[in-house]
Length: 595
Image (cartoon, rainbow, N blue to C red; front, side, top):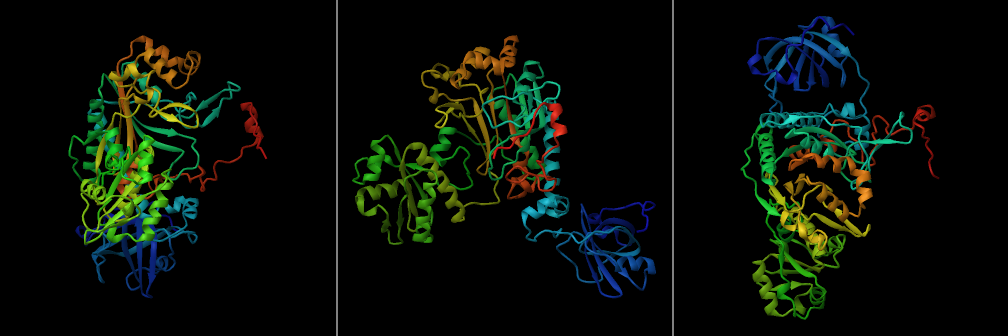
C-alpha cells in the first residue's frame, strides 16, 4: 500500500458535478463496487457525501495505477487523482453524480478490507442482529448517514433558535441522586462512600427547577437521560432530549417557545413551514374524540357517544353496560363495510379484547341501504336509523361499537381507529400534523399499587381552580400540563411546576409519602423552595423520536449511532459484561447471581 500523505483531497465524492468537467480532482473513499471489463475498470467510489464513478483505463494509466484498479474489492479504501469528464456511457439518473465520471490518472490503495459480513448499501435485507454487531459497517450505509446528518441538522436548528431567544445552555450532572416515582434508576456505586450510590439521571428535572430558583430565568440543554425499563419495543435505555425551563412563565409562554423551535426545525431541516399557533385540545376532548391522549389527526373518524340511543333498546350488552355506569361509543369506518371481510371484522373483535374490551359490535351499511351486523336483528329499526343518522353513515360504511367502562371503551376504540386508519389507507403519510394536548389529569390511579401516581411527575402544578379538590376528589384535579403530539406520537411533555413548599408537600401526600419520607427524599428541594422560588415551567422533547419521524425511520435504532437492542444490550461492544472481582472490591460490593 503506497503512501498517500502527500496527496490533498480536493472534493468529496458526492460533490463532483458537471461544473467540474475538465478539472483535476483528488478523491478518497471506499469502494462500493468494482466492474473489471479487461482494459476498463469502473469503480463506484463512496464517501459520506455520495458516490461517484471513477474509470481506470489500461491505455492511459501507468501500469502501477492500473494494477491498483485490478486489485480492488468491496470496502477497500482508495485515493485517486484524475480529470472530471462527461460520462462516456449511459447517464445514471439515480446518482447526483450520474452525468459525470472521473478518468483516473493515478491511484493509491490506502487500505484493504476483508469481505464484509453485511452488505454496505441501502435496500439489502440483513438480519438486524448482524447489522448491530457490525454497526461500524452498517453506519456506512447512505440511509443511516442521511438520518444522522438530519439529527445533526435538527440539533443545530434547536440550538440556534434557543440561543436567539435568550436561553442559556447549562449542563447538569450525570451522577445524581436516586429518587422514586419513575422508571428504575441506573445505579453507580461510590468507591469513596461505601454502601452509597449515585443514579444516572432519568431527566434533569430537579436541576433545572433549581436553576430557576437560582435566577437563570431561561435554560435549555441537549441532555442525555437514562431509564432502566423492562423490555419494551422501540425504547432505548439511554436517550437524548431537548430540555427547557423558563421563569415567570404561563403554559402559553412555554408553548410559544417550543412552537418556535419546531417551526425552526421544519424550516431549516425539512424546508417546510408550520402554521402557528398550533391547534390545541384538552385531554378530555382528545380522549372523547380520538380515544387517545396523543391523537393522530391526519384522518377524522372520531368517536361518538351513542349511549343515549340505546338506554332501552332491548340489547342486553348495551343496556347492562349503561346500567353499570358505562358507556357505548361508536366509530364509523368509511368504506369499511364494502372493503372488510367477515374474517377481518372478526379479527378486529379479537384486537379490541387486547385492550380489555369485552367485545366489538358492528354493523355494515349495504349499497341498497340495508344493514347487516352482529346486533342488527336485536335493535329496533328506529334505533338503527338514529345510529346511522348520528354517525352520518352512507352506503359502504361500517360502524363499530364498544360498550364498557368509559376508560376501556375509549382506549379500545381509539386503538381500533388507528388500526382501521392504516388498514383502510385513510392516512395521508405526507402530512405532519402537530397539536397540543392540554389540561391532563394531575393523577392517575395505579391498580397494582392501590394508590394515585403522578400522570406526568410529582412536581407538576395543579390548576389553580382545582386546588380545593386535591384531598377531597384527587382524581378530578387537572394539571397545568401539556404534551406536543406529531402524527399520533408524543413528541414531548411539559408543565408549569409547583414552586411553593407547602403545595409540594400536599402533592407528595397525595402520592402516599409521609412528611418524613418527603423530606428524606426531597428535602433539598423543599428547603430550596423556602428561599424565594419564582413560578416556572418547562418542556422536554425527545430528539431520537423527532428525527425518526422526520426521516421516516421505523425504529429509534435507525437514528442513533450506537443503539442498544430491546434487552438493553449492545451487540457490538458486548455490554453489559461481567467485571473482575478486583474491580468490585474497592466499591465494597460483590456480584451474586441467584440460581
